[in-house]
Image 1 (cartoon, rainbow, N blue to C red):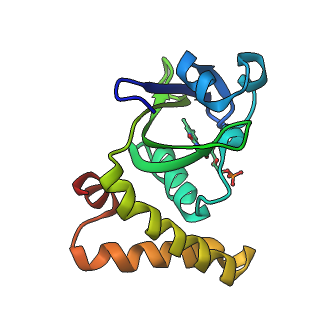
Image 2: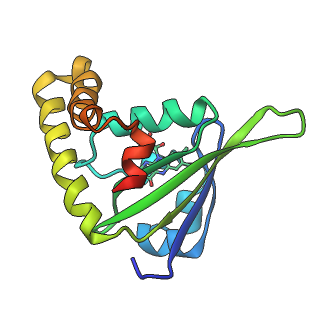
Image 3: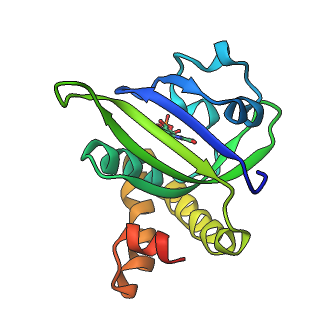
Length: 159
Ligand SMILES: Cc1cc2nc3c(=O)[nH]c(=O)nc-3n(C[C@H](O)[C@H](O)[C@H](O)COP(=O)(O)O)c2cc1C
């Protein structure tokens, strides 16, 4: 990503894309009609640990905002790292109407910390098998964060 790029998307309450900005379209490699209505996992990279997405959904479904580093894949197989912020949107009657995400270029120094953590999480998830993957990936992350005395959000924002 370039320094001044922001990748923006909106989804409905089920995570289906309802809006993508031009930079999202450029980086994903898809056209707008190919994106809208599809699940956000259309840009999911296989290197991403499942436990991160589990945490992402748990956080936004509880109404909190999520911050995190995500490796995404383009249609041509290239990848692009983002630093993402995801928040919930609400309708007139305060019902959940969807989610909103803004991503910017991550600091390469921070990626040097995050990338090996994700590799360890992914390895633990693969070893644990599908049923126990999320617990195994979460444990790797917790074992790193807990000794710092911070929660996930504080840890990510303090990198
Ligand atoms: C607003 C919003 C933005 C998201 N952004 C991404 C993203 O950039 N990359 C990604 O892989 N998943 C993103 N997700 C999570 C996906 O919905 C999905 O959980 C994830 O790709 C894992 O796919 P899976 O659940 O099929 O394994 C986002 C979800 C929401 C609600």
